[in-house]
Length: 357
Image (cartoon, rainbow, N blue to C red):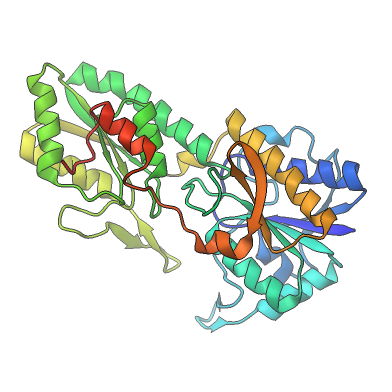
């Protein structure tokens, strides 16, 4: 059997751990051949298709590396592919033909909800055998408690808070840390809880700047001369807008909410504020142990599903076990932060403000 593996969407730490596990389990466990496809579906659009035949030797030690040895892209939907002349065309048949040219028996796709939606549509149209592995630092995929990349992103954000703590205290400042979180506040919540934030702002819990500033002023009156504020990038401004810009490729990107919050705090309280935007620092670097372990577990289980002939499934982590769920349900089951989440309750119990009460 010949299986393909690709990484799609934004990169994150832990992808190479997954690739390594797929190759080792497929080759040593079943005698399969593994083709690593370059730059997601872009590799299947090229002629000849862009791929690398992967052996255990090729993946030795890569679990330590950030990013993905196969490279990735989050642009170029093959069903609405942007051409140099400005046209948008359907190139899905070309991608399907690339899969057939490689004579693949199955494909393991490592991605998030957007990538899975595209890959599943291609699989249905082209008759592919598809298995998905969840990857997103936002941790917003349904039916899995954790996705590849989330643990490392939280570690990076927590370390940033640890470092900002001492500078804030030394200069009597309010430090605002803006973290990623496209539509969900999981990173901000987990890092803010672990890093001792005083205020956590996430898109799932509407906030009031008066409450945020009151929290900071109450700390000041209690003798705490500094505060740490964590803000998810998708949090709305006090006026109810989302701070975005359009990039050179025409895509809408988040930018600037940390500065907006810092300016409001400075204006309302007179506090000296500083902003740190972590951005893609959260995606890079060597994966923490949990992402390596999840990567290994997910990769092995995905290959086992291929061997068993179980397709249109996504591997998942539930109750300390690796399971698999229907891919369609995983795509549909978007998971944002529940305002009644146990971590929200824990943060409130520690006196952390969400700006809402």
